[in-house]
Length: 122
Image (tube, rainbow, N blue to C red):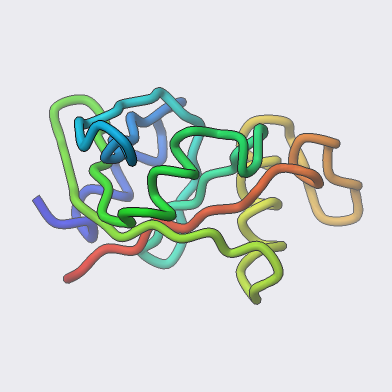
């Protein structure tokens, strides 16, 4: 399944499962995580920032698998802090999970977490 078909159906879900490759073991490491999508990309926030093992793993090997239900897609993940999509990632996730709307301040989690984007090949 490609991301174009998968992402619209996934957005109604609360969580996805992110699999990274362990940086020391080389073994798959799966976590449950909140997500939001827009424009064919998936956005994540790491509350633990660079201390999060999944962030450390994707910095070493950016190829990840995202799973929602039975559907799996492979993508390339990267930290986007300070990039053009950084504010939008924070707004999307804060809106989905904490009710953020334009004109309202972001929650502390959304302001301080490390934003990550997962991009998919077509």
